Length: 449
Image (cartoon, rainbow, N blue to C red; front, side, top):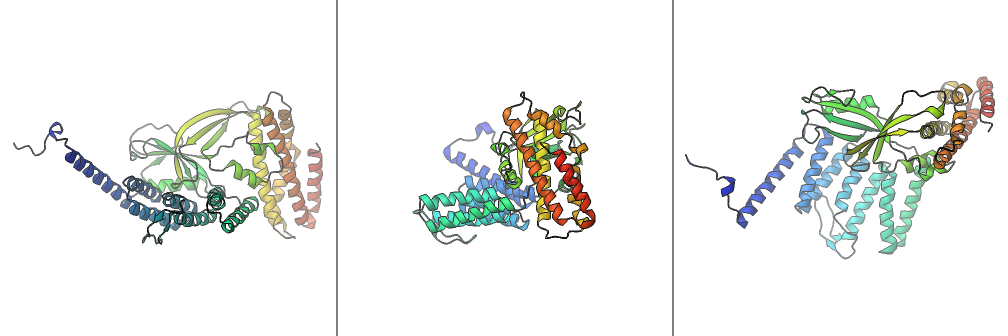
């Protein structure tokens, strides 16, 4: 019998053979990546994931022209889905190829079209395009950081004060947008892929996935189910069988550091607070109340929080990041109180902004959401818990920073409540005027301190 292949031990290891073997392995790897990019049955997110793997391979192989083409194809895919922030982050992969060097020349490109120019000019052009995408997606932190890098170059490297002035004016406009604009807080979900039926890239792995704005758990779960029609949605992370596909999804939110200085100041606008606390989140959490809590006494509100830490900070190109570690902590009553009061203040602030934009003469139907919310806010039977909050503030066993944070949160709450009542007084029709006056009396008696 003729041996067609030599045993591995008999394959020569001379330099030429080794190089040929490495070349064949590289070609095989490249072809696998190409097939994955052009034949992805699982949807857009996985197509982008496969494209990023191919781009990383091309970058390692120093195939810069091909890498750049795929970057801009990826940008196009993101723009078709109106994922402006992710398109800007993708474009940064191209910008990062060039240093801030005014002497180094880079050759022209056909696809995408770029003229002969310096590395500085190429990087600057890409940065300006990125900024527009970040602004379109209201990713203020990314836009500001990109402007700051440009401003540093204009001020300290090329001394172009005309462009420096434009940068600072643009940054001032962004800060105004943060203060006055509508905060678009993205939704986040923990997704666990369980079972041997998933590809190796997903099997028994967990991710934090960024949902669409205002997307609820039900809509998000339906979207994930469409991507994996053979998978079964389960209500817990425990499954009876390792065979098949199982997906467990829970809603999570960015984890807030209650020791952040923003909690130590009163009358910080909610939009500013939200921006500072949710910049580039990397930790996310969900919580559940512990048994034995007395709902009538805030000083006994203990809960358990599960915290997920991810590999990357959001936003990301893939709108997802793998969970690297999971921890469980017990949340004290004062921490729960701070979060509860802050959430209520945020809700009232949104209502105040919505109705302050109305001119006058709002009818009863239009005022219903504001009236209902204010009625609950000044109801002593509902807000009698504020006495418990004062008990927490006076508890010397609680860290002074947390006690002060709760005090500031209550002051903000009362301040926003007064603004809401003022707006309500301007818009309430005459038949409901007596109800408004009653709310004002309740406000005065409840918050006399």
